[in-house]
Length: 254
Image (tube, rainbow, N blue to C red; front, side):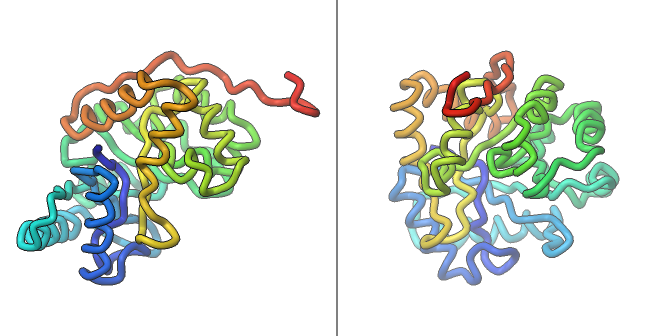
């Protein structure tokens, strides 16, 4: 398995505080069947993890993993919180695409709302021949309350990635149900751990794929896992035409 969203680099955000903790995460990932991880440290007002820093940290961690005989490859990535000057910072080399392919770029939204300029920024990113990937939309309160907000962004070319813990049920029944609805409606295209540690925010990727198989069959598992591989290679991923989420009415009657 490939995990495209993980906070495994030591001491640079709210992930592992030191190398020892990073190695614990690496061993846990291998035990889950993960072979490659895109390290995606935060880039926001609190954590300014620029492209050059991330590349250096990834190189260092890969060297230690090799020395420790841990069969895991770390690839470079970044999780930028959405802001108006994002493309300006990309142009001067502060923003990093996933695995340096120049093809896919993570975008994190605030947890409570979707900024008004989101649609325009995602359009501008696509005009730079990159594809924006909205991370964990199932945890955004405005999207939960009004899924059409996400439908319009996906319809206009954005991709999305849900969190493994959301689908496995570790973040509650409501978020699990909404994650399933997003998959049903072709409003998400990747699943990833967003792991930060081995205790409170673990990988859960194997559990999520198991739940996906139970809900949608092996073809869905294949599609999502294949999309992770295609992303790493900078190739076009599988995407079906998005549909609007059918909102449940009172007592669950549609």
